[in-house]
Amino acid sequence: MAPKILYIEDEIHIRDNIADILRAYGYEVATVANGQEGIRQAMITPPDLILCDIRMPEMDGYQVLEAIRSNRSLTMIPFIFLTARTEELDIRRGMVAGADDYLKKPFAIESLLQTIKSRLQREAQRKTDLQNRLEEIRQTATTVTNHEYNTPLNGILGFATLLIDHYDEYKPEDRLAMLRLIKTSGLRLKRSLDNLRLIDTLRNLEPGHSVRSFYTSGTARLDAPFVKQCLDQINERYDQEGRVQLALASDQLALSTGSLGIILEELIDNAYKFSDGSRPIEITGCREGTKYKLTFLNQGQPFKHDDIARINPFIQFDRQQYEQQGFGLGLAIVKKLLDLNQGTLAIESRPHGLTEVTVLFHRLIDQEAS
Image 1 (cartoon, rainbow, N blue to C red):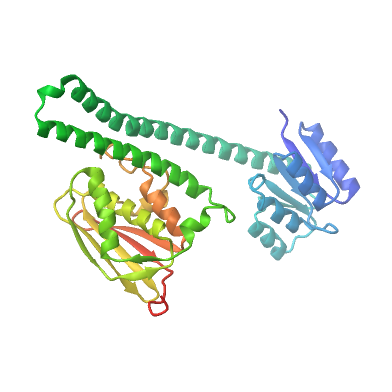
Image 2: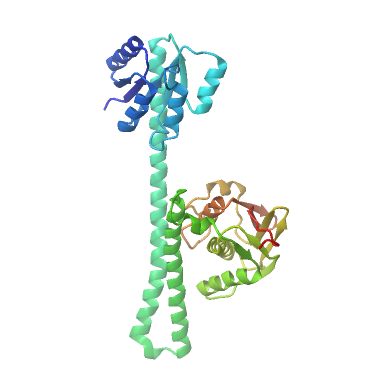
């Protein structure tokens, strides 16, 4: 199929001549006489590439480019300016606005054809790379999903079968232990399903979304009792009590109690999961100027500094080396909630296998006013 080019040019002779040449070289060309028609045509039939003049009545080329780049479905289309304007400031303005190239009129046809070919090849490579990346993510998600569903399900079904088939052969304490393991497996499965639903919700929270305010408004009191509630829920899920040292000052934060609870649970769970048990997890917090700093310190699996930029759903770091529970959603959920509430996340590996996770809450409530 021939690549589709949209050519926006108000001078009819130039427009028709260039369109005829491009068609002769195998391109499918649609032409329009002004910017508004060009934007409308691009939305109706998205092209593979856009050629656009700068000096046009009513709407100039820069305005067309701005409209194209602000449209989610059109933003990646290669955009080339064809213009007689050659001042450096004009060129810089176009590049800053997102133009892919800039050809000065008059230009050689060979230059135009080579520029078009180069930009189309680059876009084709981008799409190929994106497709490969999506396939890699799909395969990873499938592998992790199968493991996360089957492991707790096997525990539930296995121990339930033993109890049904050999109930009288076990002592009461053994039956209770099996029931606890069934509960632990059920809680693990429930958390996996809950986090899948949560990350999907958070990633689709547009400004007007009906539940956005649930995650972004309200106030929450961060204090030791609240953290201990989160610890109790995690201890129940693991059916064991982790060692934690808690030292934090109480404060009022400008985010919902639900969001704060999720952030705390995910970061504590992360610390549990990757600690080697040689020392307690340390949780400290205090106000620093206009911010509240909350820190989690644990010893165990290291976290590389470069990995924080790779935090995304289904990304698990060094999975081949470390057996990990979960979908790799915890840090992605925390990061998204902090973004929604003007908070920041930092992770730093320290000597002797220590990992320090720091959360800065930027919106505090005046204690006297509250």
